[in-house]
Amino acid sequence: MLKIIITGAAGRMGRRLVANIAAQKDLKLVGATEWSGSEFLGTDAGMLAGVGPLGVLLTDSLAPIVREADAVIDFSTGNTLENARLCAENNTAIVIGTTALTPETKAGLEELASKGAKIVQSYNYSIGVNVLFHLTKVAARALPEDFDLEVIEAHHNKKKDAPSGTAVSLADILCQARGLSAEKDIRHGRQGLVGARTRSEIGMHSIRGGDIVGDHTVMFITEGERIELTHRAASRDMFARGAIRAARWICEGDAPRKVCSMQDVLADLFA
Image 1: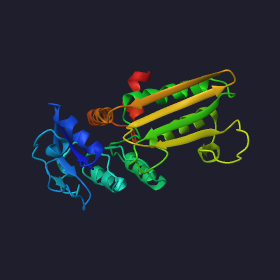
Image 2: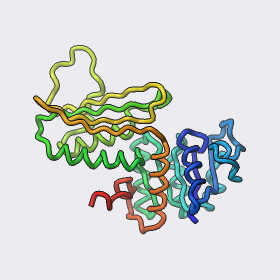
Image 3: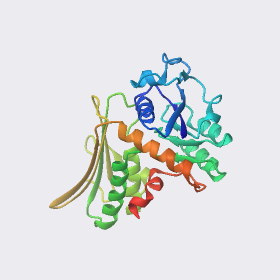
Image 4: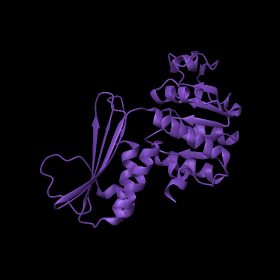
């Protein structure tokens, strides 16, 4: 029985994670947290997720309960690095889906992993999106440099960061394949008399509206033809299932001393 704690359990992703855990016989929810000012503190996590009472009430602190779990799944907007440190100190794995991590947080996670902490961090836990990452790498390496590169992402109107972490990952893949610089070569939207497109430019565009779960498209465009690789998410359940798969993987094996990605979790698919 794999015992799991969900942070940010009252959020959109948190609720779907709770529901998906409740549906699995070999998984047990042993904790659920929210920020200290949440109106949902004290609420049964299962009732909040629409699956009936689970006997797990939302609290505002991970520290008192972290030892009870094999893994924490963290999609919160709280202190990711502090949560990871708590998990490392208590030999609990952590699966991180929080986006917009700072360079300092990323460095802190790498340091913890180098010392043996079990950490999976990904901007997108969908199996389909991770296949998109793989196909983007293949296409970028196979196509000649006269193919222009564009990344377009769309999300719901409540999303706070832009571009999405998944779009950033796609741009990073393109930069690595072409030997480009994310800082110098990514162009975020276009306005006014910006001049002709440069050969090294990667266009990045963000759309926000309604209840879009998440759409991502990579375009490879040249004279007379174009290739479009697109993934569209219709439900958050695919992210929840992927995060749970990552939790199983990191708990079952001997994790390398690094921050693992969903590409590591799914490595057998790309062998």
